[in-house]
Length: 174
Image (cartoon, rainbow, N blue to C red; front, top):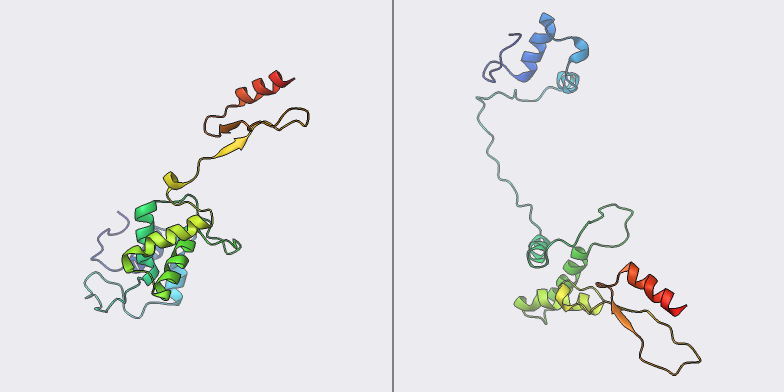
């Protein structure tokens, strides 16, 4: 074997250095990190037997993280999210969080009703988080002629609309 595979014998840097010095590894095959590590060695050598540094890890949760978690738990994923800086529209979850925080800052809404109020506000803007509360999608398929007496427009649900039916109706009209 060209080198020891035990992490207890030296560091990865010393093992790669040994492979390069012995000719077992060609200089063009050395890892990308090798030159950087050589130029900027760490303050303390990364050995397996070095005791870990005990530091307090600060909490990285923000208050809106709890709101987002509850949003995704209740309504699930809303599809693809564009995180590009060029996208001027906030995501659906972000709009929900903004409405939630607005109601929370006003202080008029009880804590247990904040999610419901934020969802109702989005519904007022035409965004239905709960698909069962959304109005059915309907479209007009016939235009009224001036010669004919007025009649109720024919509506067809988009879920059941088929291309063949559209062509059949257009052929029947001719």
